[in-house]
Image (tube, rainbow, N blue to C red; front, side, top):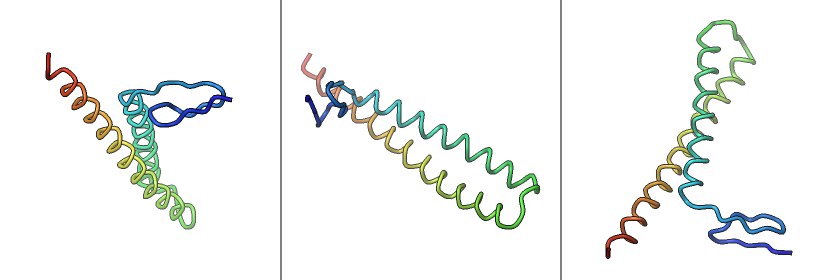
Amino acid sequence: MNWRIGGDRLVKGVSVKLKLIEMSKEYRKSGELCRSRVREIQAELESGKVRGGEKIVLQRRLTVLSAMARDTIEMSNKLGRYYAVRREVDHAGE
């Protein structure tokens, strides 16, 4: 069985190269999905239709999803900057 780690995505039986820019895009997509759900929950809470225990559950979800959105988009930005810096360094001698 071929297991690879490091710069490769770990896939059973197959080594798939995953570039940092691709990872950045995946993190961005996940972060945007979290943001979208945050907006939906905020609208639901602001509608006034949610009360009691359900409101508390939604507020907790909102807190968690907000943190997830922030963290995944931050990681996307870091990966994107690393990729840009690497390209500059790699092409500096040209």
